[in-house]
Amino acid sequence: MRFDLASFQLKWSGIVFILFGLKDKACQCYEQMLSMNPQNIYALNSLAHLKASMGLRQDAIALYKRASECPGAQAPIFFNLAFLQEEEKDLTSAEQNFRKALEMDSAIDRAWYGLGLVLIQLGQLDEAVAALKQNTKLQPMSPYAWYQLARVYMDRHEPDEALKIIQHLKGFEPKFAAQLERETGLKAS
Image (cartoon, rainbow, N blue to C red; front, side, top):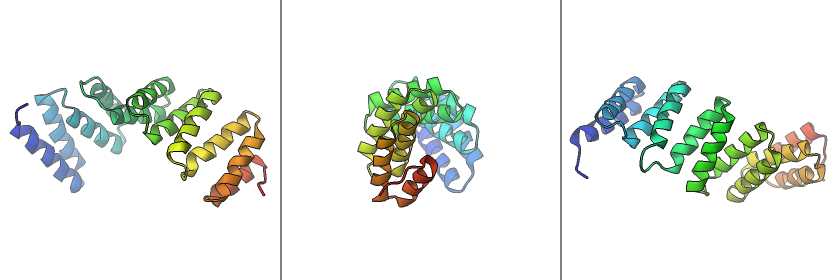
């Protein structure tokens, strides 16, 4: 692999433009990099991230899809794609890409959480429980998956399991526990 001075300069110019809040200029740098090499994963990923931050989700999704098809695509690309697809309510695609990210790296706790949320929306509650439990194993002190897990248990008519989670949350996130008590009508001792 040879050193490409033009790409190097464009990459760092893009970074400097981002630091100064000049996202349009940074986009131009990454687009120019892509004109030189349409499979430049760094440029695709950077441009997709910028487009997403500018509220241009469909553009970002298209760029992440391109990046996901490149040789050497890594799990974070699939995670970012799935995250945006979930926001756009393309739940089937989001599920597939969260699963792809997790096949590549099962330690991405946010992918387990995202998968759990997607599965809840798809009505696949048993699978959602499994995904959310995996997230709680990886992030035991984060209340978000615990909260969603309690909600799923209530939807599955398992209030005893939800109550266990409320009690657990009281130990480190009393605000979340109180919110669940209000929403479910359950009271933990």
